[in-house]
Length: 163
Image (cartoon, rainbow, N blue to C red; front, side):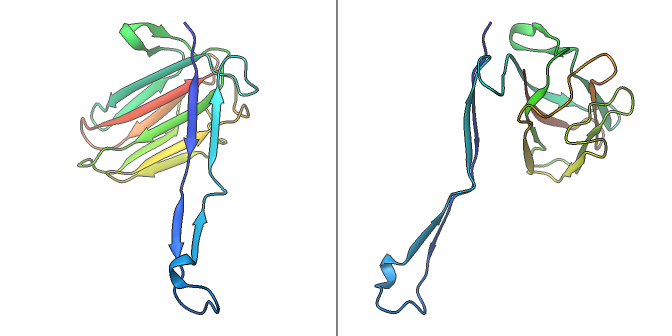
């Protein structure tokens, strides 16, 4: 199996400035902000390598769940073990209609995405995209889990790319 990823983190804004622009027709005073956008094509051979990917909906049980990066389930229910790899891309989405949901370093064998104090809480409809850029820890038997907390049996969407 091979994995290739098209990573795009973009916020492009167009502003039309219509005041205080001497000698310029207002319809032509348009500014596009897009210089902070990031795009990358990633494979096993790129500087930020990617070799495994999983996309899944994670349901909570009694308002909690633990995601183990060494025991994931991929396409066709194939076991995906991230041992020895790094999280390169993570997308966490809390669907509309849910209560707030938190993604945190696991209490047991926690994966320190972005550092030991990493934690993010998303309200319904919010999402977070993280690009590890080959700087994260290797997944191992002692560095491997995220904890999710929220309400009852609600579910979130996770996309995890490792390499």
